[in-house]
Length: 354
Image (tube, rainbow, N blue to C red; front, top):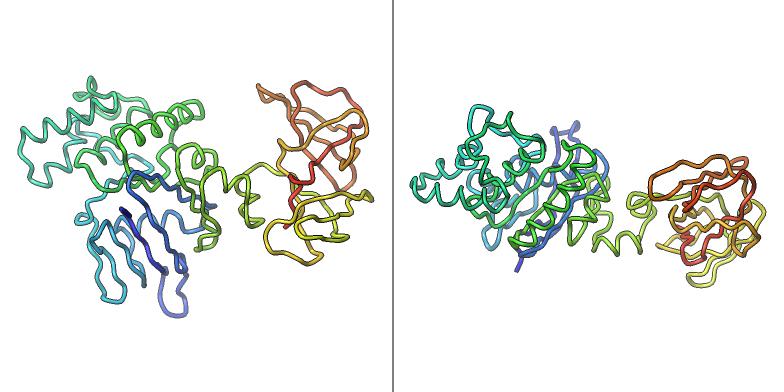
């Protein structure tokens, strides 16, 4: 069953000749117990879509259903306010009341709903315990770490058991180390509680780690959607391929094509690649993931010989940069490479041509 359905949603900022379209007919659904990440660059429409679902933006046309209840219908001019949609919302800034304790921050939404004190106490204590905050109920936000503040914001969104929780870049305010820990905690929490969640992020690693499905937005439309693995391993478009990974662009021209097999001319070397997408012209954009380039000290097939420029230590590996003239390629190595020229092997099935 779908907990959330969005159909042909259009949203503009401004009106008339100065209207700026932000969402251009977006359709999506969120099933019970599923986590969907809205991924995309700044200005792609992902946060606007989340805010429209929450009732904080007014679309121009389309419809939004939460379960079997319609909360927005452009044709009928019906737009339920945010407080009537019963959605949990975790803001990027957490938006905690600085003068209220952790307990009172979490209890705030229940008090607005006129729930009895004993039931509020039980619900708040239960959710604080679930998130490992049971011993912090009497503290104020400024007495908490960033990760603890984030969990308080999540607790506040969960306390009244909403059908869908909306997460607006929930990890962006954390430092790199804490973000990795919070990512694991958030995924574990979502799975353990069986939550249905819609999450906005611009970080593809975060989206892949937490979500069951990714919707990649580009200029107000869904470019591609699918599981994290399918989005990374089988992108349909150049935009998806470039956004979902760390890549090398290879300057090449198509010599011939037979089905998905493509013969390329790259820096005077004939190479084999694999066609992706629907591009059949000679203007192509070959690329390969950095981790798929294999470094060899001796000649190998389907490879370019390039001199090593530098190596950078990344902890678990070295990232090495090879360059000559207009071409630059990056590759990973377990060891720091000695100066010299190397053959950079690009497996045909991993050298994608769009």
